[in-house]
Image 1: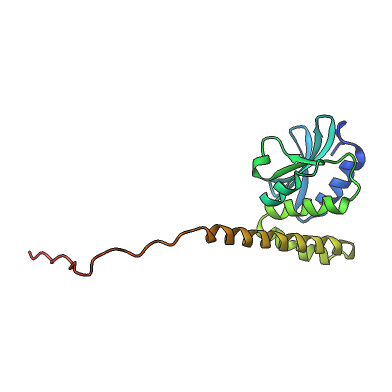
Image 2: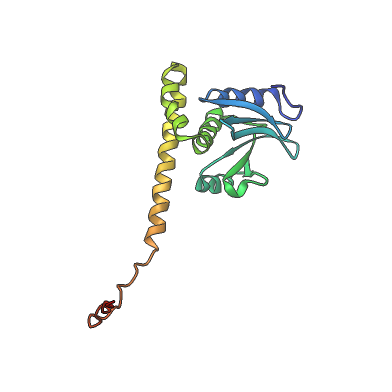
Length: 177
């Protein structure tokens, strides 16, 4: 795909390397900007917002809420309420951090069978072992967050009081024909 003028070539090249290195992914030009899909679903995008090069991806809701406290991140337009975050990619110093968030997005969007391929895919190349470890760590963090949320939700529920049917009530008599 061609580089868009608003996105520096190094940012697009690195994002492309991370995204297309994941199983069953492809790049498409969507809304005039490069986006990365697993199957037909977008899990990351690269573009420009307010004159800044940005990378967009989906995170767990709690992770998204926490990360937007960092000035490099903000809720993505239109879909931020669903966990999508935009990141200022102009001054990325740690691409491992970006890769971990893109993998988290991939795991949230991809079908379970494709996510399961992460382990097989990473074994195929020794260079991908670090990615596999980050993917596992991301999946574990996501599972812990989901369990914690389930615990929070169930701890606030009240139990239904027992039925107040009187013991003296008898079942209605059967009608005879």
